[in-house]
Amino acid sequence: MEYRLTLHAREEMSDRNIPIQMVEMVLTNPDQQFEEDGLMLYQSKFAGAAGKTYLLRVFVNTSVVPARVVTVYRTSKLNKYWR
Image 1 (spheres, rainbow, N blue to C red):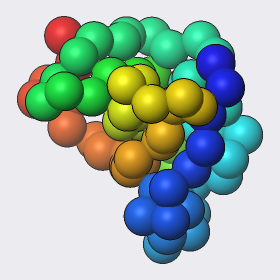
Image 2: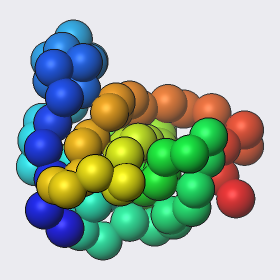
Image 3: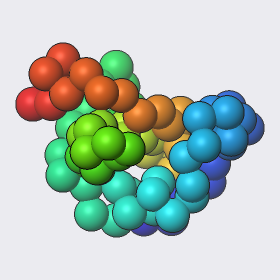
């Protein structure tokens, strides 16, 4: 998928220490993908510190070319977001 990062997505990645390689892995091979609030959501599980599993969620506006990564975040609330 060809995409661009919005300024907001870049800031969130920087603030949350999420490397671009992780975002690319989720976009290339997501564990799940579905539409939410008019955006495509790509998400995957990753192992974190102390063996904790977290979810990396990448929201993408696919209605424009190239697609725009709107925001990115990681969460430990798998039960809330995993489908």
